[in-house]
Image (cartoon, rainbow over all chains, first blue to last red; front, side, top):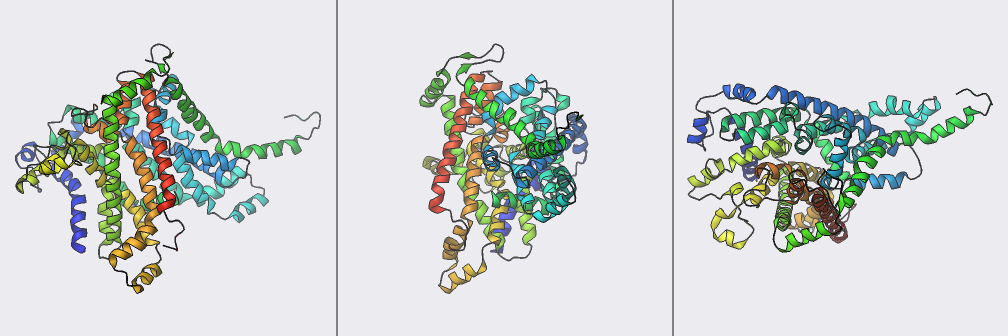
Length: 265
Length: 326
C-alpha cells in the first residue's frame, strides 16, 4: 500500500523536480544526458542569463500590477454583491441568484468576441486595465463562495447593530467584512493565482511587449528561444516558483477554499 | 434637499433609500451581467448570422456561417477536425481524471505516515501555471531530447511521438503498434491527469465526511474491501464525482491555454490538436471572421448546454444526495 503511494507520488513530483534540476544544468549537459537527474556542475548563471534575455523585471512588474488590481476589484465587488444576496431581503432575490449561478456554466468563449470589441471600443485595448476593470464587476464563483460564508454568520449580530442605529453599509463594512476574513483570504488567493496564470486574457488584449505579464511573456520566449532548453527551464522555474512558495505558506486557505467550492457546489 | 414644502422627506426618503439599498449592493454584478454577459451573448448570436470583419459593419448572411460549419463537419474540414479532437480529449481525459482523483484520494485516506507530504506532492502540479506546465511537458515529451522517451529507450521501448504525432492511443490498432501510438491529444490528456490534485482535494474532503458507522456496518455484513468501496465509498462520493464530471466536461470543451501553447497556436501537427476553442480563436483573431467565429461560439455554447443538461438528467439515476442511506 505504502509502496503504491510512494510510486505515484514519485511520478507526480518528478516533472517538477526535473524542471528545477535541469534548469541548473548547462545546455550541453541536458542534450548529452537527458536521463541524468543531478547536475554535473551547477549553472546558477542560467537564472541570471534568463532574466537578462527576457525582460523578466518588466514582466514581473506587469504581473504584480495585474494581480493586485484584479484582487482589489474582486474583493470589493464580490463582497458587496455577496452581502446583497446573503443578508438583505428583496423581491426577486432567489431568481437573480439562480441567474448568477447559471452564468457560471456559460463558456467564456460564448461572450468572447463582443466583449473584446466592447472593451476595445472604450479604449482598453493593449492595456492591463482591460483585464482588471472586469473584476470590479463581480465574478459569479467568488460571489457564490462569499455568500455561502455570509450565510453562516448569525443574524443576531446584524440585528444588534441595526438597533444601535447602524446602516447596512456600516454593518457590511464594520461587522461582516472583519468576520469574513478567512473567506476573503480564500477569494484573494484564488484570484491572485488566476491572474498570475492568466494566459488567454493577455493573448487577447495585449500587443505591446512592455505590457506583457509573465504567463504570456514566457510563451513568447518559448517560441523565440526554443533551442536554449536550460534558459527556458530557468524562466519556467522563475515563473512557477512564486506560486509554489505562495501555496506552501497558504496551504490551509487553499485547500479549505477548494473543498468549500466543490462540496457546496 | 431643502424641504420647503414640508413634504416629509424624512419619512419618504429613508424608506425609498432603504428599498434601494440591495440594488446598490448588487450593482457591480448587475452592471457586469448586463455589459459583459447579456450584451455579448446576444450580440454574438446576432453576429453569427452575419459576415463581419471588424472593418466594415456586420452584414446579414443568415444561415451561411452555420451552413459552412455543417459542411466542414460532414466533409471533415477544420471544424470537423476540431469537433472530433475536442470530443476525443474530453471523453478520455475526464473519466481518467475522475479515476485518478478518486484513486489518489482513497489512497491518501488510508492512515499512513507522511500523509500530509503525499497530499502536497499530489496537489502541487495543479498549482503550476498552465503556461509553465505546457512548456515543461513539451520538453519532457520531446521525442528526441525528452526524458520520457529517453527512459523508455533505456527500457528498450521505442517512445511515441507525443506532441509531434497525430496518433490517437484510444484505438486498438495503436495498441498493436505498441506504445508508439500516443499522439498530441494523448499528451494533453496526460497533462490534465497530472493536474488532478484540485479534484483530489475535494474527494479527500468528501471521504472524511463518510460516517465510519457505514463501513463498520458493511464489515459486519461481511463485505470485503472491494465491496465496501463499491457500495459505501462510491455512492457517498457520487455528488463530488458528478461535480467533477460537470466541471471536467465544461472545462475540457473550453480548454485553450495548453492547447494553444503545445500546438504553436495552430493545432499542430496537422490539425491533430485543433480544438473548438482554438479554432474559434483563430477564426476570430487571425482570419478576422467575427461572424463565422460567433457561430462557432454558439455551437460551443450549445454543446456545453446540452452536455450539462444530459449530465443533470442522468444524475438522479446514480448520484446519491444527503447520504446516510447508501
